[in-house]
Image (cartoon, rainbow, N blue to C red; front, side, top):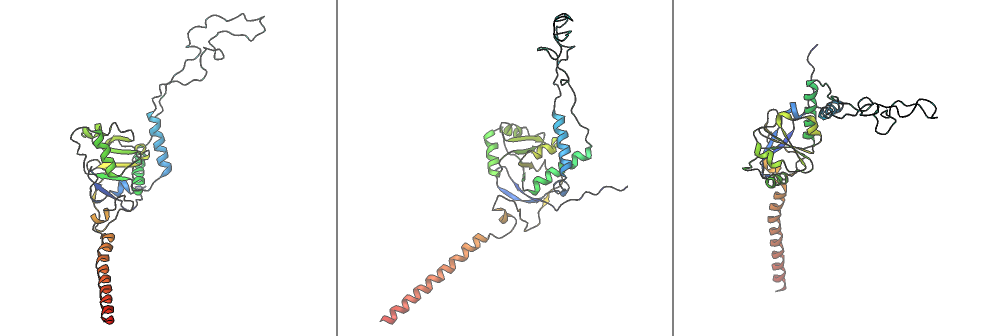
Length: 270
């Protein structure tokens, strides 16, 4: 049997900015990671397994054999008119053991490595196709500062739940984003499909973005861009500026024609 072919979508273009929100350009992401087709059943299975693996499984209850006490028979076997009982620690008594209660167990599910990788590609591709992926050159925080981290996110135009993918050496950025309630921080090597699915935005740096990043073709436009200046960066003409520039000379010509007409009327009166 031959190798399974993985169908991919066209390449995705995203904006590359600095942490102050200034647009540096438009880049093309690796289609292997950001152009895969979204397999929803596969993604659901992997995310469910990842959530199950997070469960500690330390819950426990005591059975009738483990509850202290209850050694004596509560009352005699016959002659009381009631059902016979051998211990007060039976499940039907208050303070007795629990029947079929939970016991410590491991909830981890066995998931093939190929499925985990493909689910991550599907999650990243879904966010990229929605225009919810941003690329930052680097985080330039000199010291941990939550205020600067929050300002960077506002400058980038992201809101909601934000996933910031950092490198293991970027301790300053990790501590800067650590106190923001709507920001989830994860190292690039620990990124999972669940982290991407529960986030509205995914922010990478040049060091943490998966795959190879190349410059976008000249004239490319990010369709879901929240930045109107993106058209100027990739070489397109700002049509609004053209209209304003063209309206100036036309207005001057109209004024000149009006002045000439007034002059002709004055000469006729004379």
